[in-house]
Image (cartoon, rainbow, N blue to C red; front, side, top):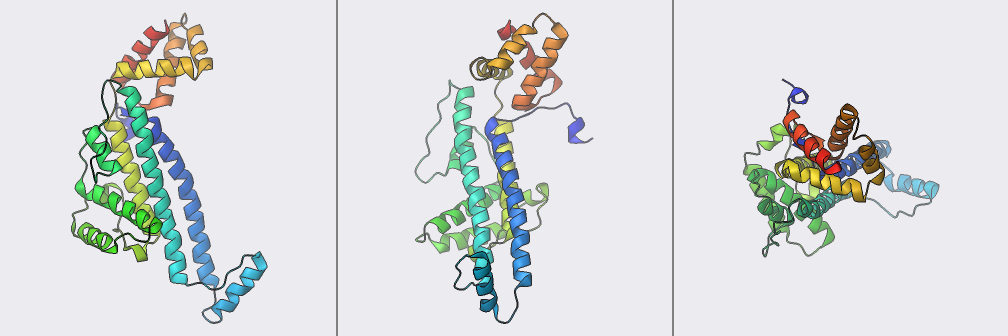
Length: 278
């Protein structure tokens, strides 16, 4: 049975939906940029390359002295990876802030020495992920750091890559991926695809596995509507006397803000939210 036909809950934090939106927009930019890179390299003559570059430089009024095609394309693709890694770090930051709103009674434990943001997040939400998946995520984080800080240790990157290539990496099948990460000097478009899929998958698991109790979801949604979405709050209040219409509006409001709910969960959240609006 297709997943969409199952009566299940796929709760999502706003931080996750924000990440999906920004990565989706970035995907389109990268894909278009890849076309431009490949077309540029394909059109460039094998002989008199520098002359061709100079002609384009003059035409577009962009000063370019010389270009190494291998370094040119690899460096651009390294920026793809760095950008996705940065967005994933932002997700972890946003998620922590949002999580603390849902679980005010819990204390977020600060990272121990040497502990990464991902490791710290997994610890705080008591989530265990495949070590192979985490290894790939952390490898690309180090690639980003290497690009930003030239004093980073290349040996660590090489050792991590060697370990990744010796792992089972079963997550590749789940993500419909067919290749493994490349060395930092050989980063290509496939690395971008690997990382975007890994980041989305990890963020999805963190979000869905951290679902608060239904009562708390209703309370947060009530506070949000009352404080930040007053038009919706007033609109819902006006519908209280029309039971069917009120119920439909509540359900729509809940799923729009938090994603997919099973019938049982949706009934529970809706009932609590309705009582708060009474």
